[in-house]
Length: 365
Image (cartoon, rainbow, N blue to C red):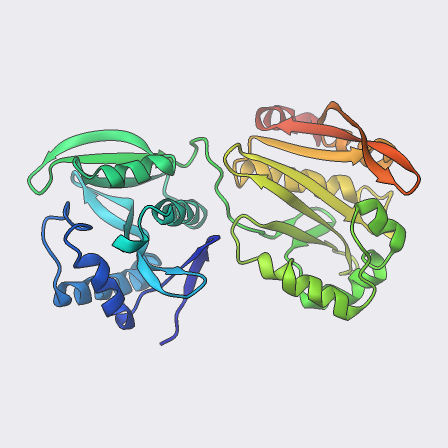
């Protein structure tokens, strides 16, 4: 049976479950220790009903509890996902998770619940996400806390005696990873790289020795070398929600004239660093400023970053002008940071905070 993968993490992937998963899921739900806080036990028929109910949720809601699988072996070790649950009389979006006993205490519950949290905020309009459990289920509400939730309330419940409800709001201090999405500006389209870009990349920038030297990357002079770069890094990484790298396409010509990326992303501290390159024939036209502003806006508005940094060499005055036009502030310099063939250069650090970007929109643009 075809398996539809919903999202991936470093060690796991989540896919839609089906009846082929009956035996694997039975090992989880029929485990009395794992389900000790549930109001009833599970036999094979209840596990079958559980799968059927989630398959219906996929069709009706576009989400449900998904199979949690190890990337290395594709083995199903539990479930995690988003469902609508009756929480004190309200149908609310709830993140649920169950991990097989021998795979617990490895961080899988936090890893998969974090991914579902980010998916839910990126793919639904819900202003908040919830987790609820019996007040004695310490493991469950510790996982909720670990993904940024806080205690919302406790209320008496005939099944649980006391039900504990945790919540996280869309605008809480968290990064919502959504992966590389298409961005359009007045003259440019920023989108994921495609194999059809290879010829114009070679023609415009990626095979140019000076351009790539200034960028700090090797040249890729042949279609085969660019394809390998795609297969091992660029296109291969688009399955990750925390990967952000855009091909820069000139609207008028359809040419790929450069690239821009968040090449480092610090999720815990809501920080990212931008790198970019533009082909020599397209420099001096304001494209670098146009695309950098667009990516800064994406970082603050779409994924809720707190700080964005751009660094450049002390001798790279053109890049420094772009950075300053985008409103970033000079923070300092790492002296003699780069060895440039026959001499050292410093590394200048510039940054902008989300509140500074928001306040300056009317003046920067």
